[in-house]
Length: 222
Ligand SMILES: Nc1ncnc2c1ncn2[C@@H]1O[C@H](COP(=O)(O)OP(=O)(O)O)[C@@H](O)[C@H]1O
Ligand SMILES: [Mg+2]
Image (cartoon, rainbow, N blue to C red; front, side, top):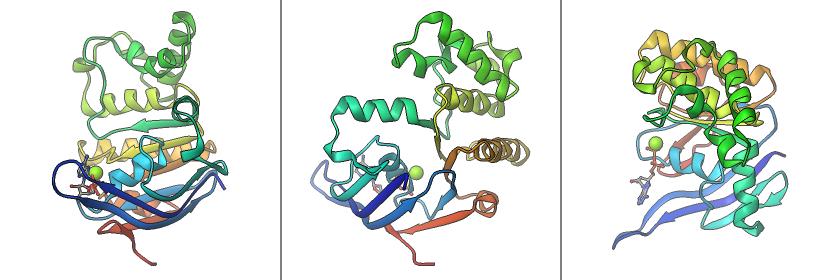
């Protein structure tokens, strides 16, 4: 099993009020799956994605990545998983405005400690995969929404991760552009990568091979 969560809970307790964002989550994910996570706003989708991506650790229960308990790993080991195994894509692209697209795509390689030559070479290869190499030297604000998301996907795959996590990746795009981006995720899954997409978009749920629907922090039984 690639990922397994059993009886996972997430409780936010900043400030006076506790918010139980996830409860009793049982989930097993195999390598190569294509999963859509759906549910109303506030149902815990982003929280679950953050846990899956080791950006956060569940409060209770057990989370295993490659059979290893994540709460038993050091910060350094967890950072290693995030950096080498997982690529993230966000609704608002999260590109850095002051550096060009090639440099943006190379950011995860920078954190992995790679040298400039290698960063540029790999970033260029990743841009080619999403048909964006002609935009390498542009700044993010010169790109359309769809182009920004392509660049963000290039950044997510630059380390050749086996898992792609995306939080509402088409939420800020028009229908046609959103469809292009969806095709790209389909292609990444066909390459053998595990793809997990959070979305309200029914088209995503239709293409995914499995749909997980959340309601008030719980997985709805199928
Ligand atoms: N950092 C936080 N602090 C406190 N509450 C939070 C925080 N992040 C999310 N929540 C709450 O947790 C619940 C689930 O949020 P979220 O996972 O963002 O849902 P979704 O992505 O489905 O809209 C919501 O009630 C939200 O208000
Ligand atoms: Mg969300």
